[in-house]
Length: 452
Image 1 (cartoon, rainbow, N blue to C red):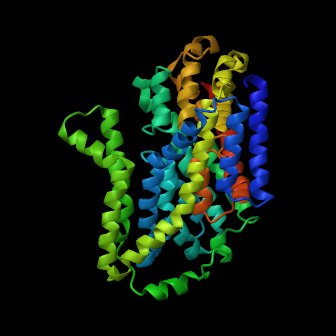
Image 2 (image 1 turned 180 degrees about the vertical axis):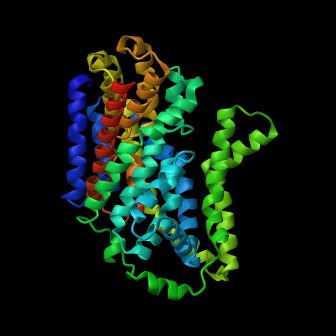
Image 3 (image 1 turned 180 degrees about the horizontal axis):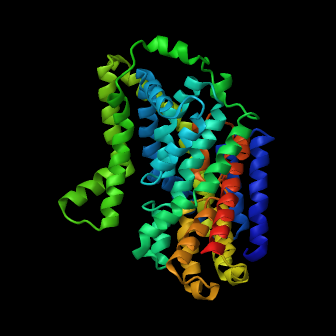
């Protein structure tokens, strides 16, 4: 199957998956796997190839973010156990004030995601988000949406994140990366505002499990938690397991952008990979655990972490299977071959192309790089020739690549599960948020295109 019938089959598959999860209460892992297999059969993928595609999609997710999720979750568990997360929340509140925790976590995510993948960033910053919820009493869902929003915007807009830097190079703006970074910062304004407004709105409508106690955890006030810990860790001790991995990843990105070579550059590249950076953070977290005199809890904390992240990993990997099935079908090639039908709409062409590819296969980075490859030979036809116009095309592709995040996107499951939400709540929060901020970003990009 190919062409329009395949597009229709994809839409039907997504609707069926949502119904299975939300209405029939089928576990997301089973629902996604069943729908993925059915779509592979309907799409006409050779029977002998389907097992390999399913295996590649499943294992690919573990390869990319599996260990990162485990290590990040362990660091978060230690921060909570030692009281370091509450210390960090106190530091954030002193910096921005008690009235702006949503804005604080959104901007924190935005800054962190410039050198760090949004999946890793959410796992790293989630303990601070949870502690801020306890500290201020604001909606946990609103804080989850704000953190996810800030991380996602920088992820698709600002180099040295791989997607935008590869798009800039493909489109001929590789020598103007500083301009691309500046335009990326500028184009973040509208979506950051839109995401903040939506987060505050949806936070009043939906409650997560960590607010209601439906996850089996007794909901405690900030004062009760602080009394349990007694004296909290020092600021530097609390920051180290989070900040050091971020700095290592940032230094690796800087080294790559600057084209450094030699043993030092190799060391930075090694330590700056998410797995190694978070391994360093894990060692620092273990030191923090021993410093707090809680070494007897080491084994149980590790065991509890693995129990917690197991379901998240398997559901996320199932989403990887769906994305792999779609990318192995003729859908992406069909979209590529009919891209000329979208050329007449100018700056909205790269946006819609990336949005279609993102929604179809799940990965923002793949959507960005694929769209850039399609758009590159059309730049002169579309009338985009100056450096600033090309930079805006990079932004339009980035805006499309975050529209929308749903079940075939690993980030959707990271945010939904770590945010204590059910899948149907994830559609109302994460999916809707990415649609809103994608459109808001495109509105700003269109206005800037009229000015420049």
